[in-house]
Structure formats: C-alpha cells, structure tokens
Picture 1 (cartoon, one colour):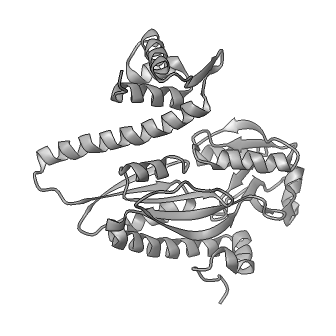
Picture 2: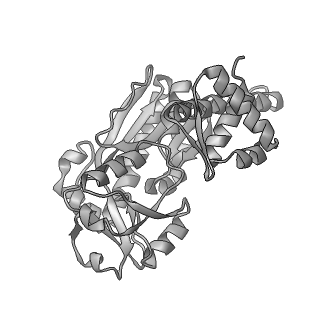
Length: 325
C-alpha cells in the first residue's frame, strides 16, 4: 500500500486536532473510518504514529515527523491544484512568489510593503504560528522565501539548495505580566522566581521553541504550570492584564495598557530571526530583507525595554544599527 493524499490528510487532521472524532468531522468521514485508516497506515509503516488515551491522541516522535512531512506534501499538492485551477482560467498568469512568515510583531507592518517585494509577480503569503512548518515547506519546494525564528542554541537541519541568512542573532525573550503584579516593580526577573506563576502558552506553535522553553525552565528547577492556551493575542492580553497568567513575549511586542514587559535576568531565553530563500528569487529576498530591517528598527525604538538592551548588545545584531544617535 502506497501512502496517498487521503492518508496524509488523515494523519495531518489527527495531529492537528488531537482527536479521532474531531479529525473525522474535519474530513467528513465517520470515526470508525478514520480509526480503521489509521490502523492500516500504522500497520503498513510498522510504527505507531499516535498514542491513544481517554483524553485524546498524541503523536509519537515518529508520528510528529510524519505529520510534519505530510503537511509539507499536502501544501505542495494544494499549491499545484490552485496553480492548475488558475491556469485554466488564465492561460498566461504572472509568475508566483510564495512567502512563508512566522507570526511575529513585525508582520503587521511588513504586510503593508509586500507589493514592493514582488513587483511583476503574484504574491502568495502563508502565516504560521510557529516556525516548524516553514523550513519543511521551503525544503519541499512549496515556498520560495521563509522568515521565521528559532532558539539561539538550535542546530537547524541543512536545507540543500537554499540560501540562509540570520537577520538578528539574538532576541531576548520578555515576560509579560499585569502591570499591577509585584513582579512588575523589578527591572529584571529571575526565571526561577516565575516557578509558582500560572502561564499562558500557544497551542499551535509546532516549532522547536516550546521544547526549548521548557528545557530552559527545567534548568532553572521547574516546569511551567500552563493553565491557559490561546492563539488569539487579544484573549491572551486580557488574561495577562487581569493577573491570571504570565506569558513569554517577543521583544518587539508593542506596549499594552495594563501590561508590563520585563527582561529575564541573564537573558536565558532567546531566539534568532532567520531568512531563507531559493537562489532564483535572490532579488525578492533582498527587498524583503530591506523592508524587514526598516520595520524591525521602528519596533525596537518603540519598545523601551528592548531598545535599551539593543544598544547594550551590538553583537546580537551586527548588521543592524543601534537605537540611540
């Protein structure tokens, strides 16, 4: 039995929903049909892809890899179908430039300038919550340019045939909390002092950062007690503003009423900002880099905590300027 698109969609749906029944609803199939298909696929592969429990299903390490590769393959299939459909309606379409970006504060302002990146080409933009899928999609040929983040100590797998440039060597993570929290009175906060706090986390970050974050917390003597999960920044901000939770924020996050952003003592958590592109779109990647640099510096200047750190650590951004004149 060869794996086909319907098998890949089933694996991706189960991994994304964490539930056989929810995957079945998403695929317009019955729950027994999905369970049977999954058993057949696991039997064919000779490995267990998911661990079942009364709470749902969780991918095994092999299952996580298969699901990631399935998403990349499905993106190629969907992209091909979309291109063929457009070709039928327009026999001579413009060339397409496909960009994948991890959701981040610069994205909002970056999107205002995307027409400059691809003059004379149709732009296709994909935004992911985490950085896990973008490298896989670049490697598979489904994307031409990728802009994403990765932990500072992360060893990225080689991407053959692609160019890679680190735009920012290190972004220190900030902890966001209610401005009324006693911790907000401090200039920096020891990570260990956050052990008894309730945390908010992103359930859709499929990149290496969640494991990295928990590993750093473990080195500080605790595992973060996550009570809230949200991908919506307004809901997340409301929970943090109320004092119910704290969360990790990128240092370019805009100031918010009722919230305080503080550095973690020693900056134990940090990430790189990476640009990857196919050699044939070198000029477009260069234009995107220039726009990113301008947008990024605007955000650095707007965030006092990061701006101060930025000028104190020129080694973290050798290609970009300091904030102060």
